[in-house]
Image 1 (cartoon, rainbow, N blue to C red):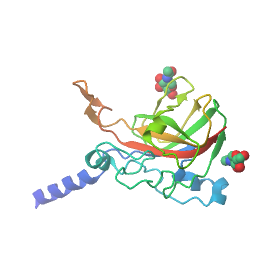
Image 2: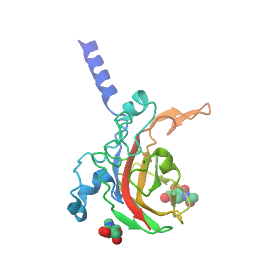
Image 3: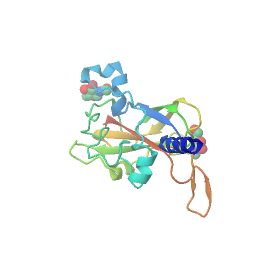
Image 4: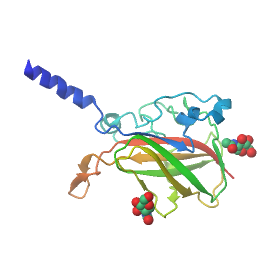
Amino acid sequence: MHYYHFLTLFSLCNFLPSGYSHGRLLDPPMRASIWRFPEFNYANPPVNYDDDAFWCGSMQTLYNQNGGKCGVCGDNWADPPPRSQEDGGKFGKSIIVRNYTSGQTIPLTVELTGAHDGYFEFRLCARNSRSEPETEECYNKNLLVLSNGSTRLPATRRKGIYKTTARLPPGVTCSRCSIQWHYRTGNNWGDCNDGTSAVGCGNQEIFRGCSDVAIT
Ligand SMILES: *[C@@H]1O[C@H](CO)[C@@H](O)[C@H](O)[C@H]1NC(C)=O
Ligand SMILES: *[C@@H]1O[C@H](CO)[C@@H](O)[C@H](O)[C@H]1NC(C)=O
């Protein structure tokens, strides 16, 4: 009897996510969060109450099922593209939420509803047509530099609003650009690939979101 209960508890714990971080990109509003901003009501953005949970399916899904691969906008890699938050997916209606100019310093705002250390990065995929693929390679071409010269904004254990600014790459214009928020948490113990192990190394939760913008 006791043994049975122990087993049940043990199995339940295996199904619970280890960290429980959560978050969303609010400026520029990511595709799955546009519905939170009344100024975009005209475009009838799809509602998603779980817009703080684009974490590649789950930690389990990301590493055990998908070998560490995540959709560019935080969906389960195993979902058929375009995945829900990708352009053309359920939330990817190509609603341009900001107009920027090339080289401009832009505000970036993230809300964490659960916080577990780690850091944020922001990337720009500069497409001029929706038919150009929105890929990891496209986002990797422009890792945005934050105003203090770093590319990573550290997250802490604090929930709430995180604000920073980044400079858009000079000379890059695009009518169908998108900005990717990438949040790698840092509270799990893991292998650092150098013979040591520490908190923050190895497998961590990943959260992502993508926003449609235009840069002239
Ligand atoms: C961006 O600029 C276009 C063209 O001028 C305009 O139609 C659109 O309303 C602007 N969008 C936003 C979010 O400011
Ligand atoms: C930039 O600011 C963050 C805190 O917001 C800090 O952790 C980081 O070390 C800074 N980077 C540089 C290069 O000053």
